[in-house]
Structures are given as C-alpha cells and as structure tokens.
Length: 69
Image 1 (cartoon, rainbow, N blue to C red):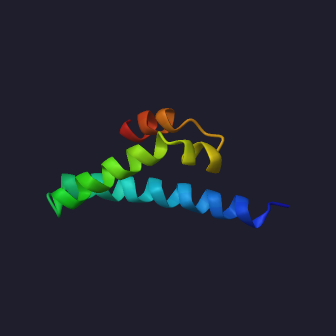
Image 2: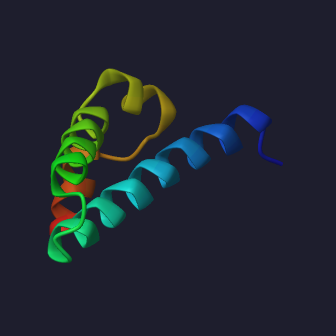
C-alpha cells in the first residue's frame, strides 16, 4: 500500500506534466503565449530541481525529452 505522501508526490509530478502539455497546446493555438512560456520555464526548472528528485525517482531531464517527442 502506498503512503499518502507517495500519492501526493505523484500528484504533484502529474500536475506539472499536465501543465506543461497544456502550455504547449496554448502556444500552438496562440493563446496566452506569454503565460504559457512562463509555465513551461517553471515546469522545466521544477523537473531539473532537487525538489523533483525528492518527489520522484524519475529522471526529470529524460521526462522533458519525452514530452518534446
């Protein structure tokens, strides 16, 4: 059984990935581009941070590569 903190960690990471995808979609649709670019920078910074490493065993840089594909 997963501990509650593991579920919370997974939800934080999932939300960041959803935010990243939505921001990319907004840029493609030319909607609120400045805000979308800022969100992308924030998520990229998060995925490369030590905080992300605490929340997840995943490789944040590799995740970014996969998101771009």
